[in-house]
Amino acid sequence: MFDRGTGTPLIVIPGVQGRWEWMKPALDELAKRCRAVSYTLCGDLGSEMKFDRTLGFDNFIRQLDRVFDRSGIERAALCGVSYGGFIALRYAAMRPERVASLVLVSSPAPGWVPNERQQQYLSRPWRSVPAFVMSAPFRLWPEIRAAYDTVRERLAFSVGHAVRVIAAPIVPPQMAARVKMQQAIDFAPDCERIKVPTLIVSGQDDLDQIVPAEVTRRYQRLISGARYVQIERSGHIGLLTHPAQFADIVSGFINGNGH
Image 1 (tube, rainbow, N blue to C red):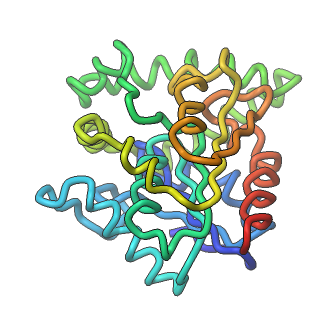
Image 2: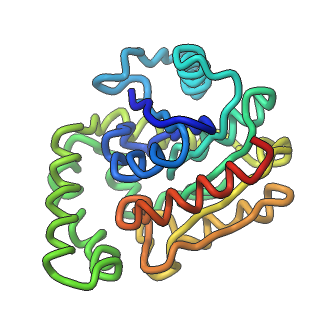
């Protein structure tokens, strides 16, 4: 579990890979501006919480309740990154008394369907690992190239990110199960129940090859009063390639909305 910094409490929910460690550059910057808390999704190594199949998606709600309780936080801003946006959204709809504001970062909106390549990964998660790993640099390189001006900077980021990924390994069947579970749920009613200030963050339309920015922007229409910010020269991992800018955007929003 990551828990650092002081000030406004912000709980950051990781993406479908389930590991907070992948987001560490962004968490470190957030911790300079607020109290940043993050954790590993239940069912993964290091989560200290098993996934109860009988509960389904409610596992994530129960786990987030535990994060609030363990950290001694009564009310906090929630930031859901990619798949974590679904968890943040549902929690804000179900526990409005505990959520002060909501931030959804490069998150697929209701109605999103995995593309053909992603469907192949879901159908055979373990067998798809080699292809997933081999194709990752090609998916992310256009974004990394746009984010940094020099080859040295691009390589330094790539090596650092690879180290984080290797140190916090994924569980492919768990990732596939999370997406399949989400695909069976209609999150549109949750959007209608959101009453707290909400910020939608994405990268550029031409750089996010995982969740199209236009899909993330649907939240503007679905959540009343939601604001939108685009991080230039970024795609799906703008919180990692531009961590200080990302932290400025998020901390500025949560500190300016009644905390």
